[in-house]
Image (cartoon, rainbow, N blue to C red; front, side):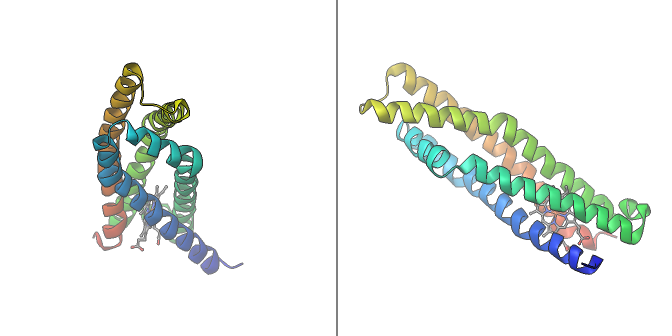
Length: 174
Ligand code: HEM
């Protein structure tokens, strides 16, 4: 396969995985987490479905990996085509800044959001299995986890919006 086709394939994977990953994170942080927080203990049951049945964390990790790996390949292909000095041009610097924010969002999501979502899903499963309302202890733990996820979601949303903005305007930065 010649370089043009490899570049097109990498761009295709990057743009499709990138917009799906970023869109999902923005939807989750902006609308879903506030709604789950508002729903109280019922939010834990929905989270259990999302985490354990729909495999939300695994799907987000797959999209994140595709975005970052295809993004790194694009860097490699750009540097091969235009030389290392490309990184110091306006587009090169802006794509690099966007990449850094995208990777920061991925790391933050893996170490803060994913563990809290998994814990909430596990607790939701326990509550559902008991067939009754959550105990006072479980309700307090669910509330604490919902608060942590809500705040972490806001952080992710800001990081990912900066990454998307950089990716969107980089080509036109002088
Ligand atoms: C946060 C999610 C991301 C989204 C939604 C996204 C989206 C995009 C889009 C739409 C473009 C095409 C821009 C254009 O042609 O003007 C692009 C290009 C690019 N992205 Fe991303 N991106 C993301 C994350 C990343 C990451 C994490 C990296 C690196 C690890 C990266 C590296 C690149 C590079 C090097 C290009 C330039 C490709 C070229 O020369 O055509 N991106 N990205």
